[in-house]
Amino acid sequence: MSIATETGGAGTPDVSAVAAPGGGLRRDAVGVPHIVFFVLAAAAPLTAVVGASPAAFAFGNGAGVAGTYLLVGALYLLFSVGFTTMNRFVGSAGGFYPFIAHGLGKPVGVGGALIALATYNAIDIAVYGLFGFFMADIAAQSGIAVPWWAFAGALGLAVYVCGVRKIEFSGKLLGICMLAEIAILLVLDLAIVAAGIGGGGVAGGAVPEGLTIVPFTPSAILSDGLGVGLVFVVASFIGFEATVIFGEEAGNPKRTIPVATYVAVIVVACFYAFSTWAITQYYGPSAIAAIATEHTATLFFDASDALLGPSMTLVMNVLLITSLFACALSFHNTINRYFFAIGREGLAWTGLAATHRDHQSPHVAGMVQTGLALGAVALFALAGLDPFAIVFAWMSTFASIGILVIQILVSLAVLGFFRADSHGVGIWHRLIAPALAMLGLGICLILVISNVELVSGSDSMIVAGFPLIIAAIGLAGAGIALRLRHRRPAIYQRIGRAFEEVA
Image (cartoon, rainbow, N blue to C red; front, side):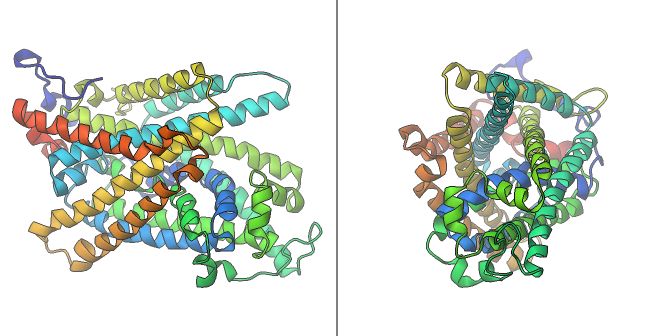
């Protein structure tokens, strides 16, 4: 696929043809619950809590992790104020790309689109690697030797088949997966609370210090290691911004998208905070950091074994696999719509904007996305690279940096968009909230980059160069836009605006 293939005359892409209303995405297909499920699936609650929070306990601010989730949740609520306000005036299946194009100019917008595509594809590949790793390990324990990439390939095909269906199908499927994984964690959380209320003593000392609010106190949150803890906590929120991507398919998007965004952020932040608070109570605030260091991989499973029994722990392991499937499906739908948007505007092969005759899904974009992901999996497999230590760790680190860059650009775009014309929007929504969000996200980006070796588990020069690679991708996108301005002015003028012409 090439960006804005330069053909003239009869070969010029007919963008209006692919953007025709009859061939677009399915309208009024999803509501607040569907979109929230897409966001929760991308955030992968079970994977984030069981997989990421133990590292935050071990290497970050220990008992203060639960409070840190609320702190980051507050930051993303601030961020949401600006972009949901701007969503009243700008929006398409291109997610943040049209926001950046309208607020900071078309060259920056195209640069942001390429960074977003690289970021979301990276996290999708990371999920494939983690899924393959877990499934291969399960097969090995059963005495069956199956390479990790075979399971990753099967995941890719399953996700593609589901992604071709109507958007409502994915929303309902993700809803089932999300409710199941949230339920199993809540059962464990409530069992810990019950043990604490009953005086502890379960499994030889569960809730040894009693139920306490220590994890939410300033002294715990602001303790040594907050910077590193923030790195892992921020990474757990990746995907919540996907609400805007489904604006074209949502009923009453100017209301649905803001409501879905705020609900998603609040649910993610509160659920993560409650689950990490509960596990802190189980081991004790004074001991959680040391125990998490020794038992990073089994921190939650050990508690489940003791309180719920091996059968429920097995269920948790199974739901961890379905959590990864749901996460892959959510990001697949997100990436498809980015491809659809740039194809519709003529920035890439216009065939990406084709939609399925029956399901009105961007099935061609889905095929391309699946091909790219499985192609990357094949390259990693041929190189003999570890699916966890390299594929998952490296790609998720790249995505963490990339998404923060995009979010900072969006905050800047909100400021730029309302600078010339306030559109009747109050100063809090158009200036103060996005400025504060930009400052907070900038601090998080600095922390991620300065701790990139710890986050990725690698001292590779390639990993250290991720920020430069992301910057180069953005500059390449800006260069493509400037080239279009001179050689294809009609397409240049449509950047970030194709949806407005067919809405």
